[in-house]
Amino acid sequence: MSKISIATAAALAAGLASAQAADLPYGGSRAPYTVNQPLNAYSWAGPYLGGNLGYAWGSVHNSPTEPSGVAGGVQAGYNWQSGEFVFGLEGDLQASGADDTFAPWKFSNPWFGTVRGRVGYAFNNVLFYGTGGLAFGELKGETFGLSETHTNAGWTVGAGAEFGLAQNWSAKIEYLYVDLGESNFSITRLPNSYQFGIVRLGVNYHF
Image (cartoon, rainbow, N blue to C red; front, side, top):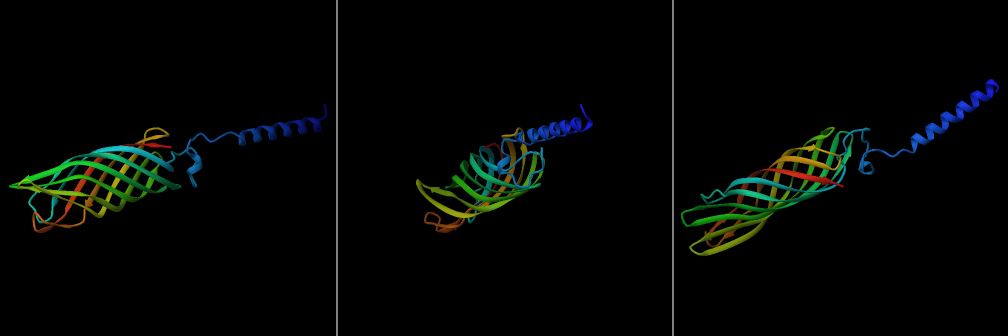
């Protein structure tokens, strides 16, 4: 076989191997959601759904009560990623056992929710982020057998860290400060509102 034939055969073999390598799929299951994602890095992009459990403590404006208690619920969101920067939207709905009684007055916060933006920076599978947006929830007042509830909208701001445990699972720790808007309560004859902080742990499944 001539030297020209050998060189031609080698070139054809190299071209075929290159074409086959180009057809191999990317290993990350959520690669299509990622924009400018470094190869082999953990992907935060795409939709997710999860649950959380935490503890809330706060105070009621114009009242000596300081409702506190366990709170837990569900969250869902969507992330966009460009390099190490992660941007997202998240909503959650929580059931809360926060309440407190002072003399004949009792205030409680049976439930609340938030709709927030998130901005973070990822160190591969560790994401640090800030968050803020709309909060809404119910404040219930009780005295001498009478009760009154108001559902208000307010605001929230906070920060957290999320840790990728596997390609589809992550865990997070988060702090939020929540201010539910004021309402005029007939039973107190005063405007009352609930401001509180909450620390919670959560898990997310990424689709």
